[in-house]
Amino acid sequence: MADPGDTITYTANAGERVDEDISDIDEIEIEYANASAGKGDDRGYGGRVEDTIADVSDFDTLYIWVSDESSGRYSTRSSSLNIDGSVNGGGGGSSEVSVSPDSQSDVDDAPFIVGSAGGGGGDTAGGFDGARTEDEDHVPPPLGGDGAEDGDAQAGDGEGAVSGHGSDVPIINEGTTITGGGSTTDEGEIRISYQEGLEPPEPPENLTAELL
Image (tube, rainbow, N blue to C red):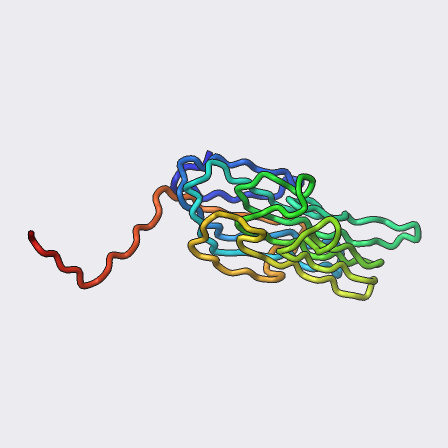
């Protein structure tokens, strides 16, 4: 259970979902959400979202996926060794924060507060796309990096996105999304600060009161 004032760093765990009790939390700041890079010398880097602030006062559970090579909320293909000894580099999975527990295996179009897509893979025989690349298995945004087409090409970087696919969480500050600004290794990371009580609105200026 997250307590007000907590700042928690979540690390990769084979794409396993973390369920965080936020029943005492009104506001979260996602300081950063990094997706994993692809695999191989010519891999692309993961996407990044930073400094997103969201009102979660109407929700009791936060669902968090931290990606590694191929695994995340949305997963992709891991590295493979070919019969000639060449290697296809695996793509990176997606790191995401959501109030919906659904994953790629449940629905094609899972909503999120923030999502960071995996980098494409690139090795001696090319590589595989990073999740959520747009195909029959992965539904962007965010858009995963393209896998390298051959052993001489550079794979693409993953993108970041905020409130994709109709999330109904109010966003106070969207923050920043950075293509390729996430992990340069095959492990992502997410850091979230939890707060009780939303910031009160600024009072209007030049108020006057009249006694009746």
